[in-house]
Image 1 (cartoon, rainbow, N blue to C red):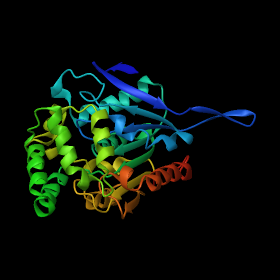
Image 2 (cartoon, rainbow, N blue to C red; image 1 turned 30 degrees about the horizontal axis):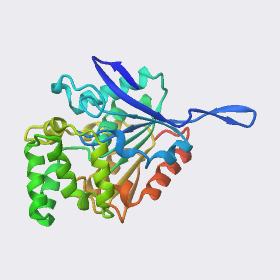
Image 3 (cartoon, helix red, strand yellow; image 1 turned 180 degrees about the horizontal axis):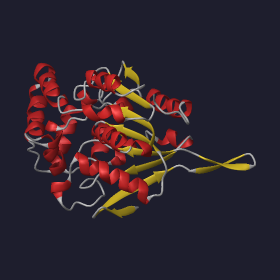
Image 4 (cartoon, one colour; image 1 turned 60 degrees about the vertical axis):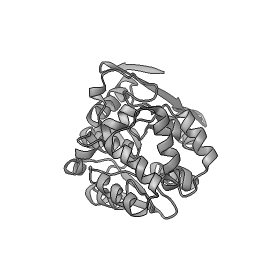
Length: 293
């Protein structure tokens, strides 16, 4: 499905029922917007891992502009601020009230900004392996220099330089970096996921190259405006969004909860999938109707 909003076309997909029988009445379930990372990827990596959440809430997946199945026009607009406005426009286009916002990695950066700028639009905020400012990049660079193999350092230099030219180069990057993204890395499953994902090298380059928008963004002054109950989830062994950045968000978002997954890296979905789903589901159920502060 596609929505024509803000001069572009955003692809979205829906999983789960929004209205379910409950005895002699019909009960409305929460709606969650699932925000993918990258940039330069798409929403497919959340399927089927998040499917169990559809037993308790309706899931709306979408691809950022310039990525996945969304429109590729106007690359100058492929940035965080535009992604935030697209998310809010899509929410309104679909006629949704306050949503559960679930953002992972770069998606968590979009989710933070959206919840701060549109607090009335978010009922619950779930931030998974993310950061609130561009300081995560030099920290990741140091980790790779200290712990990475020569080939991992080489492909990361392509990331830091914004030098990916082809989809094949991006797939090779994720193949080489797979054991650092996940402590339970499965080469066969990783290869299948890379083939399913519609990679967009230019979106990745625009974010990470010197002067790219992820080098300079800083949401910390805005985080105090978040009013939704907030759950922050980090992987203890995450190399690109180290857990210290989740701890920082926890300090800045009023009333937030923090959980660090001790056996996970950046991909908690692969390393501790059941525990991740349980944490999100329990948080949403426990905090129905509550606002932070």
